[in-house]
Image (cartoon, rainbow, N blue to C red; front, side, top):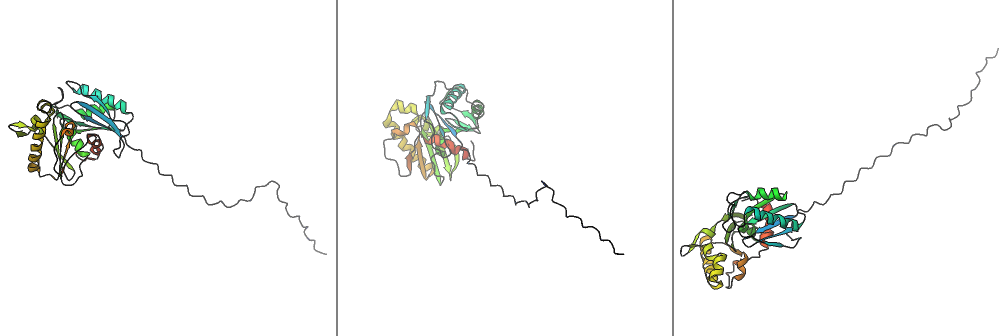
Length: 272
């Protein structure tokens, strides 16, 4: 008998609409690195408190004024309350800012005012920096006005003396850029009188420009002997009344330096 062969079965047909062949996944592209965002420029409200006027302007980080300098007359009997109110008004006029700095005509240590002989009452041991911070709701630094003006003009090399001739007589010494506050205004100068007695605004108005210039010339000679400075800078409103030729290492600086120094005050490691 012949052996029966198994019947051949038809090949299976592909299933219609079956799953499509799986392709190997493409390699994922690396995510693009985020573009660096430009750092926000910090705006500083620079305030210069003087015996006759309080000035302010907003500055960018390079010290360039981005608003007009505004000025409000310093009131009679300029108490802390009055001065703070004027600074708040100047802040509104300046618009948006990130921080503030103020130059103040008196002895200032760590933001506290110890004396302000050319203003009103109530300044002894007054925490001006803290009160301005509270009022403006911004970080604030406060220093003596001559110190701030000096920060805006010194080179940072050698011994540099700064004096200001305004309502009073301000002074500060910089040694290789490090500031040392001075109170030369109350130091004996001429015939038993102090520098402020002979060169302050009261004497300027009472005795006239000629006598004032004579005393200033003597003061410059005395200061050169006492400090042997490399450079002397003279600021303040009455500096514009100097009518004699200054030595080559002495120059008059602009009142604008009092505002520009407000930027440097934030870079200064010593807050005094």
